[in-house]
Amino acid sequence: MLRGLWKLTWIEIKIFMREPLGAIGTIGIPVLVFLVAGRMIGRRATLTSPAASRFIGVGLPVLASVLILVGAVLSLITIISIYREGGILKRLRATPLRPHTILTAHVIVKLALSAATLVLMVAAGKRYYPVGIHAPLLGFTMALLISICSILSIGFLIASLVPTARFAQPIGAVIMYPMIAVSGLFVPVESLPRAAQAVAKVLPLTYAVSLLEGIWKGDAWWAHARDVTALAVAFIVCTALSAKVFRWE
Amino acid sequence: MPPVIQVSRIRKTYGPTVAVDEISFEVNDGEIFGLIGPNGAGKTTTMECIEGLRTPDRGTVSVLGLDPFRDVYKLQERIGVQLQQAQLQKRIKVWESVDLWASLYRRDAIDGERLLEQLGLIDKRNAWFMTLSGGQKQRLFIALALINDPALVFLDELTTGLDPQARRAIWDLVRGIRERGKTVFLTTHLMEEAERLCDRVAIIEHGRIIDIDSPESLVRRYCPERTVVLATNNGSAAKHFRTIPRVEAIACTGSQVTIRGSGDDLVTEVIHCLSENRIRVTDFRTILPNLEDVFLKLTGHSIRD
Image (cartoon, one colour):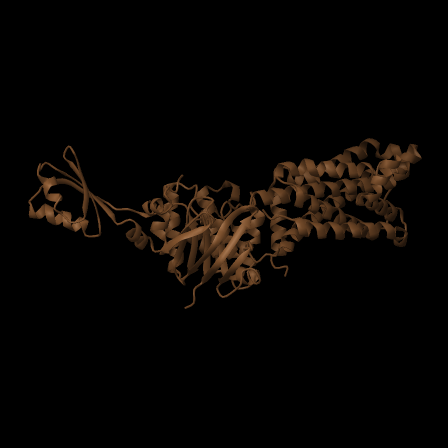
């Protein structure tokens, strides 16, 4: 059933690395920015202000995770639409490859690249951010995996609907970035205007941020049952919808 | 041997447009069968209905004894497909694509390296897809269509956009596919390609099949006209040619005489007349109708219009 999955995944990773900005853009630059920021503010901030210390302790890891996640989703939308426009999806479909194998391979590529970026960040951050990691890494990884699957499914829905590759990136950005703005990542959801709060409540990214922050701080899973449920519902709805509306050509 | 492909009264519409309208035909084992017609005639839609990539609104299709809609995965194991205007990932290497394709099939794939060698791509095995020329890309697509050693190969507008030299090289490869005992189903809007490659062709226009037969039979049936053009200084030559049966028109310009008539015997009769009357000629050629003329006669317009 998943014949060809690993070979396709591996080839897609290699192809991505051959893109002019592939490896540098998705892994190198985020890690570099993280390091530069760390050098500039890391040590000083934690010593002076408790708010900054809280940001670096909890906000920063979650911020980094969510930004990488959104980057992965945007990249997925673009790749799927380019593959569709170029007839690559259609050519792959005219083989015994199952459609879900092709799509799963792309999700795995995005997961692998996101994981690589995060691991490098953690390794680099250890040096510059003296807060250290007291978070439950295994739990956080689980939370991240749940979030990424849910948000990637939104990406797939967008990829199913965008008409051409030219529109993929801007449409993706127009949908994803406002989601970040009201997700509670920068301003707590409770202090947003009432209308924005209502919007935030129906967007899955809000629940992803809440789950990631909570688990990072050491909350128990049952305290975030609502977040996990919301993400699962988003995943199921988006996957079902994109299965219905996905176009191969 | 039952037919490899059996298409019975299929119809496919896109909104108000009828792409394929009640088409029926059969493709026999071991032949090169061509679906020929202008762009937009319904060739690709018909082919994709047979490959299982599209579902017709009505009608039935049977390919290698399988139903392409219910048994699409079983069918894809046994067919090879080259799609019109398909691309691969820009930066996939030639050997990687062959290796990937080989891993997709349940049955043992044939040796990819040998296939690349036979198709003249071995020097390009480490090249990215985006760096290949049009002819090289099409040869790679042929390699991918053959990698699972299929019984039936589909080729959709294989040589469109290629220069004449690359086109001839591809034709040789397609004949090679038939020599391996495989059946080839192809579409083309190039009449010369159909004439040189196909054992039988179906002429399709506006989603309907106008006729099916071998190119020679179609030409004989619809275009019995023969034309002989010769050059002679003999002033009374035209008078003699008029006595030949089934000659319809004679035109003289300077020393050139053009004789129009019909029937396979016309050329023999002209030669006979020349020798009987001791008419010396300095030039002699025949103009035979081809599929292009058949198409013109059947549809009232040229395939290029």
